[in-house]
Amino acid sequence: MTASSALRDASATETALGAPAPRVPEDVHAVMAAIGQRARAAARALALAPAQAKADGLMAAARAIRARAPAILAANEDDLAAARAAGMSAALQDRLVLTEGRLEAIAGAVEEIAALPDPVGQVTESWERPNGLRLERVRTPLGVIGVIYESRPNVTADAGSLCLKAGNAVILRGGSDSFNSSRAIHAAMVEGLVSAGLPADAIQLVPTRDRAAVGELLAGLGGTLDVIVPRGGKSLVARVQAEARVPVFAHLEGLVHIYVDKGADLGKALSIVKNAKLRRTSVCGAAETLLVDRADASRLLAPLVTMLLEAGCAVRGDADTQAADARVTPASEEDWRTEYLDAVISVKLVDGVGAAIDHIETYGSHHTDAILTEDAEVAERFLNEVDSAIVVHNASTQFADGGEFGFGGEIGIATGRMHARGPVGAEQLTSFKYRVRGTGQIRP
Image (cartoon, rainbow, N blue to C red; front, side, top):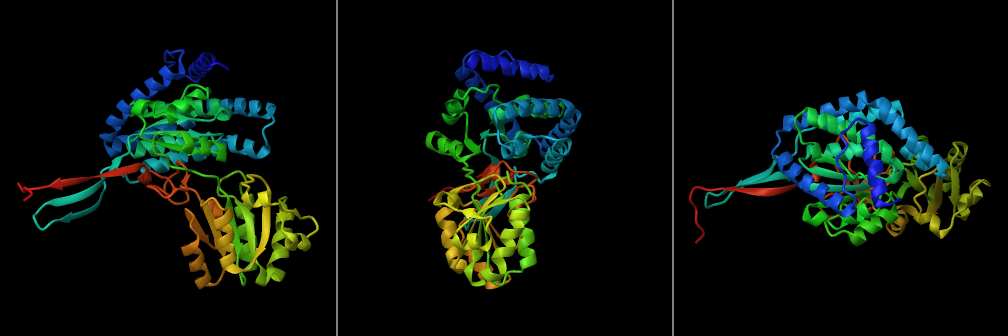
């Protein structure tokens, strides 16, 4: 598809959904430059928008999502039909599919974000100097945020809502697989914002499938983009990190581990491991590797492996795990580095918590890792030494989600170490400035 045909297709899609169809230039560069300029103007307005206006806009957006549910679900079915025709795996289709229940959850998350305390203008620290100067550090918006994501259409609402709550304009570039679904959700979001008096350009969706648009975002849109958030697979994140000319909140793959320590409560372990792996296999918090303490393998290993197999999960394991059940297939070196996003898990025996930590450090992605143990000292060692954005004791890794953290939603799970780490909610989408108040002081 050429850039011009993609843009015409996008315009037609928006018109079909009832949103105004702008005159779209033929050139992708010109389209993206215009988007950036509109976003910058919207960001200036949002930075000064009252907290109540932003909350009202998001509540209206949630109502619009519910009102437009038939159109959104129809658009999603178009995406699913194309995905099935292209041979997309069942696991990836699960990321793409919308149901009435999932759509209601999307609207509910927007409402939850609307109800959160507004981070903009919050004074995080204040003090007075001996010379009488009074200083305070206050949260401010980042500006214009670019979000590049793949199949999940819910990101359109989550990312748009969180950025707006933090006073930022956002430019969303969804995946081609979810193009129609994202356009439908975006149209509803804009309808809600405008009804509350907020700028329509506060949340923009790139109106083309053309990959050249991604390159324009990575180049920074002529200086109008302040930060990029990639949310997707390893190849997407690698490209963004390699090519971006603006700061990046990296969201790496979820190569998630669960370590079951000696003496662990077996009933608790069976329940947690099953949920962590199989509740939804396609989410980034799903467990991909199970590590079991060799010192208690005779009690723990076979029940855990049998439970997984009987629940429909394929198990790839080391020699000890294969010996525990004939249905286990051999694990390769690559398995320890694989995010399956499917009903597959790799299993290995390790010599205690130290070896588990070493394995996680060697193969993990610093996303989410968990320990199941009744030994408080071992738990604290794991929580302190595992250098992941989220570390968990005696709970499912599928709690690695901004909504479950009380953030209302998330724009992604940041696995880097700069600025934001873990679920990126509204608060993490702010910067800060210092306000200094004096009474005539001059510096000697």
